[in-house]
Amino acid sequence: MLEQILPASASVAEVRGDVADAVLFPEEKEVISNAVEKRRREFRTGRACARSALVDLGVQSQAIPSGPRGAPQWPAGVVGSITHCDGYRAAAVARTTDLVTIGVDAEVDAPLPEGVLADIALPEEVRALEALALAEPGLSWDRLLFSIKESVYKAWFPLTERWLGFEDARVRIDPHCGSFAARLLVPGPSLDGGELNTFAGCWLAGDGLLLAAIGTPVGAGQAVSGVGAGGAVGKD
Image (cartoon, helix red, strand yellow):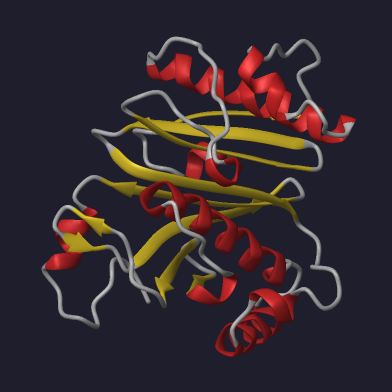
C-alpha cells in the first residue's frame, strides 16, 4: 500500500503483524532493553522492514540505531522513515540523490480518542474536518489529520533536528486527489538555497488503515526560492 503514495525512487517494505524471527544488532537491542514486549515486537519488525527496504535499494543489511528523539539513523547517502500501528509495520527508504527526506505514518482507521483533536488541530483544521466528515462520511478524518502531522514531523526532524509541535503546521487535505499540503508556521529548513515552507504528500485509506507519506524530492528548496514570501510547494 505504502508504495502507492511515495515517489518511485523510494523502496518500501511492509508487513501485517510481526516478523517472529527478526534479529536485531547489539546497538539496536540496547534501545529496547527496558521496553515492554509490545514495543519490542514493533521495534524488531520495523527494523526488519527497514533492512528489507535497504536491500531492495541496493544497500547492505546493517544496524539502524536510534538517534536524537528516537529517530532512526540511516546509512550514509540514505533517508528513510519507519512506522507501525496495530497489525501493521512498514519502512521506506531512498537515496539522498533522489529524495532529501521521507516521512511516513500509519494509523488504524478509527476516530481519535475524545479530547485528542483539540490538542493536535488548529481551529481552521477543525472546521475543515467537519466539512469533510459531512461531505465524505465513513472515513476517520481526524485520525488522518493526526497521521499527516506525524508524517510531517518525521520528514522535518532529519532536516532540522528540532521539535515541531502539532500547532506548528497547518494541513489542508484534498479528499479527491489523495494529497495534502502542510504549511509550516515556523521557519522551515534551508534547502538547496531556499526555505522549505511546505511539505507536500499523499494519503491512502484502505484495509482498515490510514497512511500518510511525504517524499520530498531533491531540488524542492530551489522551487521554493523562486516564489514570493507567501509561496509554497504544492497546494496550501
